[in-house]
Image 1 (cartoon, one colour):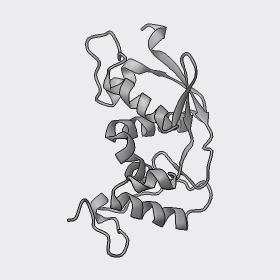
Image 2: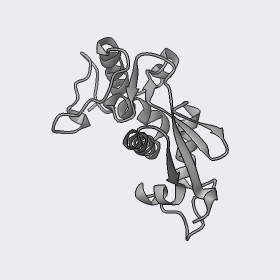
Image 3: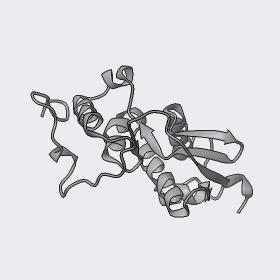
Length: 166
């Protein structure tokens, strides 16, 4: 294995309160429409790796791509246009990750609540969930496990529609 595909993942701090861990439902429902499902799954995998390691860890990008179902062509590793690379860029764009230096990726321990400007562009269900969690969260909200069921079972605000009007 070539070192060019290995990265060191370090924990970064969230800048704003309230913030939510990367495996919190807030991250999935509110950040999901901004970055897409691949980036959400990638962020959660990076967060779990940091949690298991208790801090800094190493990751092999080829192996990470395989674990997430984002196989790279042949044994060349993920290229600049690969789904893994695009997901990393999306996470960097929303400041969940940042490259500190070549081969060192910083990942936030918890993603901050989105700004009012970003919130305006989100689906109604994501806006409702945002308001629910921001109003009831304590600083540095941690994991929240979904009850049995699925996201369609989550409550939305009074008079709001769920999933585009259904």
